[in-house]
Length: 326
Image 1: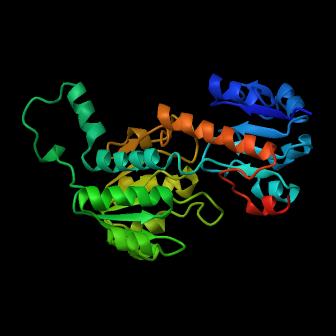
Image 2 (image 1 turned 60 degrees about the horizontal axis):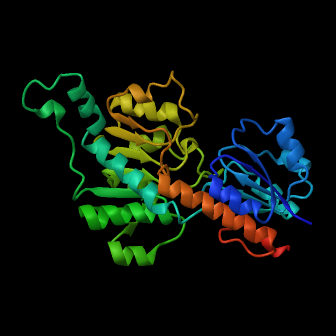
Image 3 (image 1 turned 180 degrees about the vertical axis):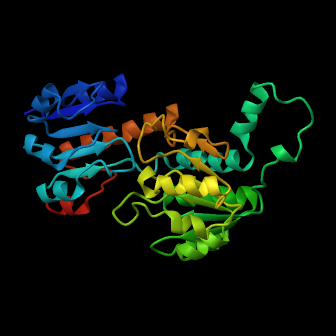
């Protein structure tokens, strides 16, 4: 029997062709809702599901009685009901590693752009306001030699820390559930409790996953602990931050600036003041958005789903407990 895969978004023709050599593939190039009748009909026969950027509710699993695995084309998996998938023995595969360096590039881009006011001053030139030599009203802040506070020190956090310590001679502090002795040795990084890190850091960069424990990790209290000169950078998930508190901190001068690639609501509401604030650099969630990295992420997801449907362990597995039940 030929196994069946339902695929949606972010797959190129060579990857679809690769899957179709071994499986029957129903591909939905533009899928906006899991309520789509044709999608649900195909899912009812599917053994594998592969795609990204679509919320998969636990109730949808009832419509997929043969499902063995879901391969998300992302490292984050907050769109998936992990506990319910594990209970049913459905594997969840993701794509860490292949996007680490690219996402770290984005994080450091935000550090540099906010500190040196790059977007604001580029617009200054475009408007024709550059009529004389640059003076103090246009000055930015140095990055080199400053203190970088990493909230989260996983793969991406460590990659940003390396850029800061080795490329910009920054002192690295980190707040993380577990100590990182190898990074402490290699980078001179020092572990801190979150409150101490916020008080000491010139740049606070957030790379934690979204979990019930990290949702709204940053609110009014946390921003009040930061230096008035501090710059806040978030490349994790928008819901890690209480946005009204961030907006208030920026407006009141409790923090100096913010560089944001993620937001509580995406796409960002036109009514949000964030993209209109001179001390904010707002990007449209481009963390891993390069041709090379998106292709590598999609290929990792394809490799994961192929392995599972052949009875083998995937390269990147989120819910180990589901594998142990097989």
